[in-house]
Amino acid sequence: MTDLQKQFQEFLTDQKLLFEGEKVLLAVSGGLDSMVMLHLFAQTQFSIGVAHCNFGLRGAASDLDQKFVADHCQEKQIPFFSKSLTIKGSSVQVTARNLRYEWFHALAAQEEFDKIATAHHLNDSFETTLMNLTRGTGLEGLAGIPIKNNSVIRPMLFANREKILEYAVAQKITWREDATNSKKDYKRNKIRHDLIPELEALNPSLLHTFSNTNERIRLVNSIIQSMTDQILKEHWVDQENRLNLSWIKETSDLIFLARILSKYGFNYTASRQLFETRSSPGKVFLSGEFTATVDRNCLIITRPTPAKAIEAQLWKGEEIQVSDTLIKADPSGLLARDLIQMNKEDLSNPSREFVDTAKLKFPLTVRSWRRGDAFHPLGMTGIKKVSDLLVDLKVPLTEKSKVLVLTSDEKIVWVLGYRLSEEFKVRAESGEILLLSSTKVKP
Image 1: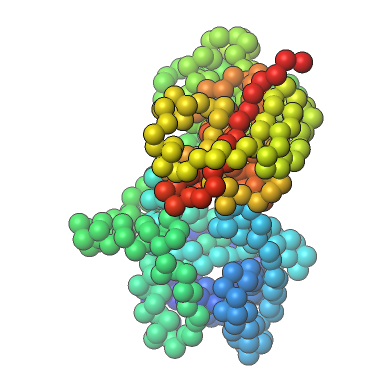
Image 2: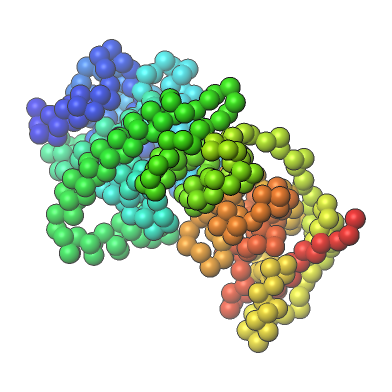
């Protein structure tokens, strides 16, 4: 038995990832990491099956990946399952991840697998921690990729990419290379190829250091979760959807309140605001799906009845009235250089936005914002949920339910009156420029 095989089996046991007699479904892309995981599991006594998703993002190369994994499983007499999935929406990575896990869970239930294993390793976890840090995160985000999450396990998190490669070469394991991993189109690849080498130059033992720090963070998270569970056991009244707040004694108790509220969609900023106003009965806070109302040293958390959804189409050169808002999409007749000369007040008017017409697909859609809506706000870094944007901008509860979004081919162009998408802004090379406007009208 090699060192990696020994460490792998010890990790399964120490972390209680699998128990005797359980069946595990392996997510195998055909790349180095997943093929090594498949090889390691093949040395154990566990019953395994392989699941492969084909998103067709790399054309013929995607089909060759599927054939490679299928042929390997046929040769080794391992049950093989595959599914072709189509990605729609603005965020390819997020959509692909959601579709992949949705299928994994459905397949595991259908074929009676007890666990789902992915091949994420130590480097992946470190990259995730750095990504979380760039957009703001709590202790859970600092811990990187969780070792287990209900039925999903990550049995390779003990190993770094270098050890996995050494094992693959020594065991003569073949795999498929994904050319997109070397590109820097995605934030993760920029972190992997640009940032981490700079950090390793400062600390050659960077991953070892992270592994030790990561272990301590996981232990702290475990303690916080245990104490949070105890608070809920003692102070949550299920029949009344009420959380008594008498347990709050110190400022540090905010960490437990934030952990509780995160399960209802409230981010840390909202949790802190709520914590600071917990003695003000009548204060109301809204996440994408839930309402938290302060009431005499307790919180009432409910799921409000959703307002009637609004959806309408808008063509170039036309206008529509949605509820009390008149929305127009007028060709501006301006060039990019003309905007530079415009008064800053005209450009900063939240009711007017100039966009690159070439990036739009008509008709545009005006609709109510939905839970889970996300886009890249102009002037901000990375993707942000609309619900979090409205919290950050301190939009009153009474106004949040009325907020509309303008979309093009399901991508958010504009959260009306609040923020344009970075993707649709006017650039120096833009041709036709469209003026979008929203005006409140009297009933």
